Length: 267
Image (tube, rainbow, N blue to C red; front, side):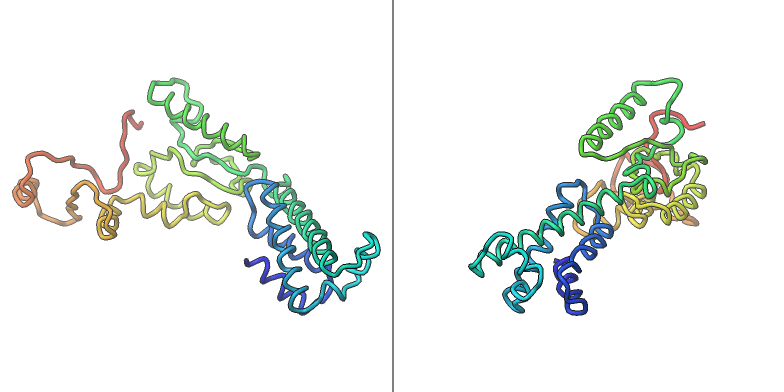
């Protein structure tokens, strides 16, 4: 819809049929699709629908030089057939320009990788593979294969890799960055810096929100039922005995608000 509106507005300032080519090229760059096919059909539909609208409301398709050439080339005497054929040809032009933008965005001069799977030092090429680490490696291997099957260029990196250029990837996908809570300040700084160099999956705001278990409060406030959680804030003198008595419980799990499950030790 955005593409259709953009094309419609653009032609009012530059009333030439070829305005759709650069417009769809720019739109495809700003809104990249997951595959070449989707990019092509998106460009085709944008121009095809816009051309039909212009034909119906402005009769542009009939008056353009392009339409005259199409009518002569295919010996079209019916305006209806001219309308369909010219709209289709213009749509194909839009699709091809959108497709060229797709491959341009994939060019090595822009991005070396489509997506980087984020892990941490312990899980990146480990010398010793426990069953736990093997599961992590297997999960990432399966995900990598699925992404590659979709035509994406994928690699796997530790978030703290000092030599990796984060501008070389279009997306960074958080997977097993589970040492963040013992390197919290360093991780926060890395997040803020790298977020300006690539696009996170999920967003920076959501990642930061998920780092502190106070998100349980937000979940409950939005009607999502979670394990009953009681927070003892810094400076509080509340004891575990008082919490047990107030909640009428006999057992609980105690952990920091900023922490992660750990089945293997952190050095």
